[in-house]
Length: 236
Image (cartoon, rainbow, N blue to C red; front, side):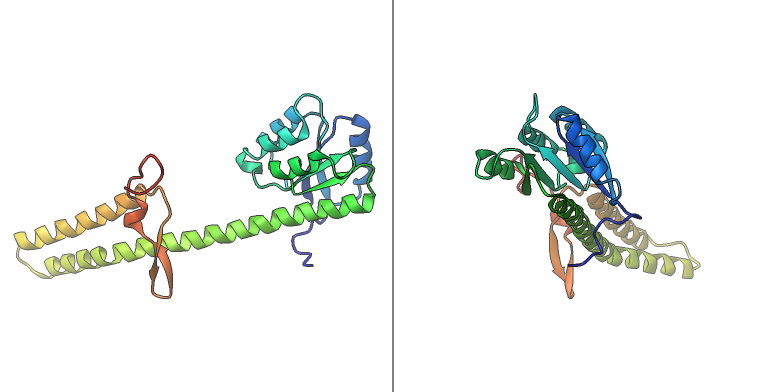
């Protein structure tokens, strides 16, 4: 397994631990004090949700049995917070394997569970897994964003290349001619600049992401991507 995405002292993993027993939080903090993690602690589901609204984490350990909002409901709420919607979460519980909370927790968005009492080596391995998954996901998202930017740049360049080249040619013709520009030249220049302005307007009003084949890859389809959508999200 690649170690590139694992937590290190120089780049520790950011972990949120949620447990309603202060003793458990204290012990966990002591156990992990010499390992590359930055821990944030919460004792309630409400507090966990509030922390997630302020801080992006790379992993969450969530106790299932919490007073008030339980861990499964807290997980659902956290899934709705953009900065932590993709943060991998593991449930903790003293309930033995086979209880309904396991299936319910996975359906709520958890990726795994850990039953108390657990071996510290198992906990450490799962914390490292959380950080690795989070960083791999972020790298994949960054790659996707980079690809999308290239497609947008390609689409923009493709749509603007012709009218800009035509405008440049017309301006050169006007400058080389000592006489005043003809009405025909000015009309052509006006139409060309109008085309450029239309393309810029499409770029400003992009609201979806539709690509089309171009050369050996794909570029953004500016015309379709800037068309108004029906209320159901489909193109008109």
